[in-house]
Amino acid sequence: MNKLHEVEIDGKWEAQMRKGCLELCVLASLWAGRMYGLEILRVLEEESHLALAEGTIYPILNRLKNDGLVESEWVEAETGHPRKYYSLTRLGRRRAKHMGRIWAEFSASLSAFIKPLLEKQELSA
Image (cartoon, rainbow, N blue to C red; front, side):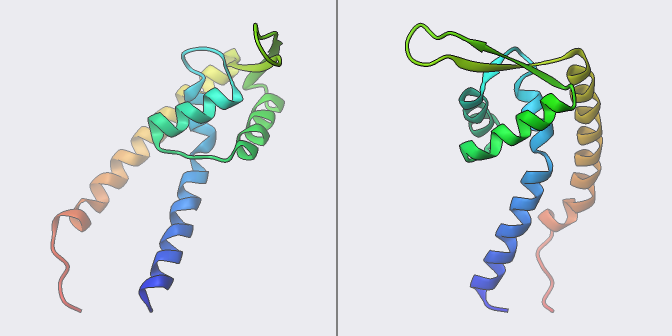
């Protein structure tokens, strides 16, 4: 397998891994209070290194709203257009805490499991 093909496979794997935790990350971004879509994108990029396209966040927010996990309201801005702010519902806060606990347990056990991969030098095949 050539290096280019390995990088393509790694890129796809990493994208799938990141995609799997988006819902948790969006809920976590709203933990401290309400935000509008572009704010959520900035927080995700700055705090978790998840760089998302603008078109990615709104379907997730709509799904979370349909599931009763977030609510939204339009707020008039002093300058410019009104913004749609999102915040966690009571159910959303419970779900975020539950997902956070599951993620913490899973990531801790996975980190322990892969620790030898990161510490030892690879043996020749």
